[in-house]
Image (cartoon, rainbow over all chains, first blue to last red; front, side, top):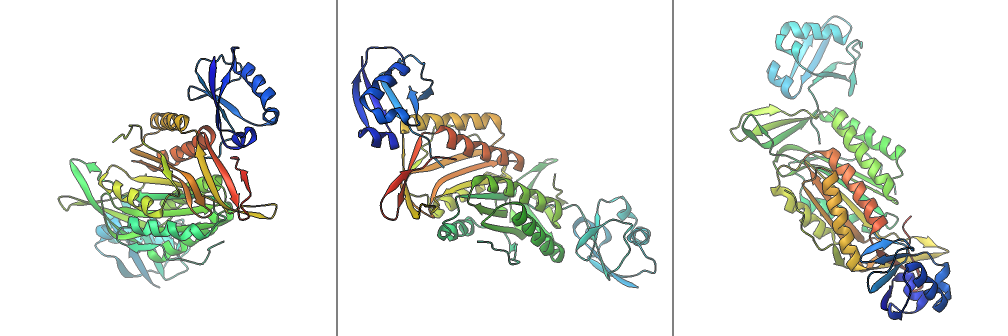
Amino acid sequence: MNLTIKYYGLLAEAVQRQEELFWFSQDSIEELLEALYAKYPPLEGMDFQVAQNNKIVPTETIITGTEIVLLPPFAGG
Amino acid sequence: MNLTIKYYGLLAEAVQRQEELFWFSQDSIEELLEALYAKYPPLEGMDFQVAQNNKIVPTETIITGTEIVLLPPFAGG
Amino acid sequence: MKDRKPKSVFIEGPISSEFIGDSIAKHQSKTTIGAHNIFLGQVRADTLEGKTVKMINYSSYEEMANVTFHEIREAAFAKFDLSCMHIYHSLGGVKAGEICMFIFVSATRRKEVFQAIEYLVNEIKEKVPIFGKEIFEDTSHQWKVNS
Amino acid sequence: MKDRKPKSVFIEGPISSEFIGDSIAKHQSKTTIGAHNIFLGQVRADTLEGKTVKMINYSSYEEMANVTFHEIREAAFAKFDLSCMHIYHSLGGVKAGEICMFIFVSATRRKEVFQAIEYLVNEIKEKVPIFGKEIFEDTSHQWKVNS
């Protein structure tokens, strides 16, 4: 399937983009992250959370949407 | 000694004055209150605190100043 | 920046929203501050036995009140790591819906302001000799007691 | 009066003291309110390795942020007996000394507002995807992390 991957803040700087289409044939966010680490090695050491359908989800979650968002530490307030 | 007695709020309404000179020859606030109750019977059932030298003091306190203040419950804020 | 000289707390009549806004604006030059907390007391139109409070007329034993406000300020500066603290209370008539108390604390970090504001409000309500005459729409009155 | 429709939280640039003053003034018609509590986040001119923060540029994953703000509002209305709740956060550039967050809760009694304001600030800092790029005087930057 063709996923839209979005990157915010420090992560967008690290991968040098805010958004991309990414072809992915497996099931879980964990597997997606492995594919992304292969493409962007610096990402692996970084602190972030993953959101699907406007919720933070654990990495073992199965991908159900078409958009996955990588979020660096929050700094609101 | 001649004390100045001050009354605030509900107490001033009850004794119908805000301030008076009161001749008093004993030692403690407790004794002063007995004298005031004799003069103003409604005062005895009322809820109040007594201040001397800008401090709330217990009724067994010996009178050291020339001004004694009777304070009804606080309502600031 | 500690701001510890004795200050006047009492304001005649209600505290305006413009006064509060101006007070906030004055803190923009203090760039070590990260968190402000403001408490406002507002006069409620409480209904008692079918009668509604129209305004509260505040009075105080001011001599003791000023001493007590100063002690409460000093104690709060000692307990909490605050940059600034401002306390204002109305005297005289304040109508229902108007503001009668304004407490403003500022610190580098938020934890300090939460603790300080609650401490200050509780201390003031408990210890400062301020009296409130609740005046009803029919001009009868009763004396307010803090709960 | 519950005020529970989804509302826009984000404001472009800093939150002005006039906006805060106006917001306070709007509550004077709500005469069941006895206590307001306001939290303001202000950008600090922190110094790191000899460089001083000049401004923070805020960005957000807005779609999720709006959902999360709504959930936090609903949870706070369920937990605390509040009359009103207003939350505003800046996006874009906010200079040191300017205000980037404004949280305003009102209730009949003071206890509710103290608990609610601390709950809201902590929930927002922890759960809302807002990012802050701290820009130093020499135009270099680093990404802020809530502590």
